[in-house]
Length: 268
Image (cartoon, rainbow, N blue to C red; front, side, top):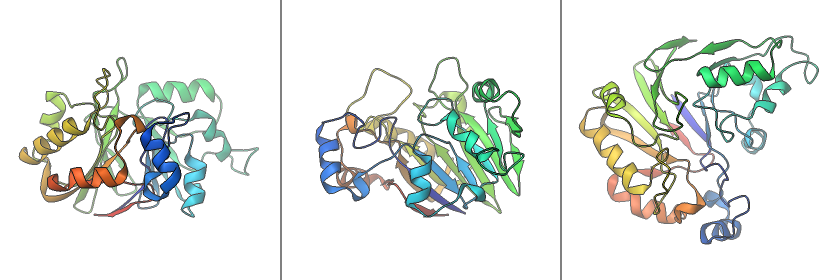
């Protein structure tokens, strides 16, 4: 299984949209891995995770085509993960397609927003529920509940195929005991997990700082959620966390955690 991280930034990216902080200034100067678009990923070139406002530039940057997708999976409804206006470009009159050519899997909130925006458009929409497994072209996809937005069942996503599995966890917050129990013993081969707040914890409980990220990864390892030697890669970094990519590499190295970057390819 191949996972491509198309974006690894938080809601305002790095450099931050209107930011003049240290990390943003550094990213504008150094570029490369320091530049982060809004978080999104692609599994085996066909399964799209989230559809944010940077989708087109991400596809163009990596020579990819949306026509290759067979499904799009949404984690939740925040604007950096769900850009509703982008869906219309897969349908007539923008292209000669009578139906959207990929299935959308999403929670109740996202499904409601799509139906409200496109009430009569031919979109194959599957509502997802936590701890329920969905089959799509040989893949098993199981949403687990994140601790993120009040009033919405936000999902992190387990992808499994041919004995290989990984968890994509963005906007996780610190998992509830119920979610830790669901994940215990799964022996996942890889984990992509958010580290949004970096050195500085915000009052918002829906994201993790560096210390919380390390603690959650440690608990997932000790509970058997991750197999021994499983790859762990971070995503959803913000400029407000005050850590450059190089600084993240140095800090996370002792914990066998690798900071993700835009365009990173993870072979599982």
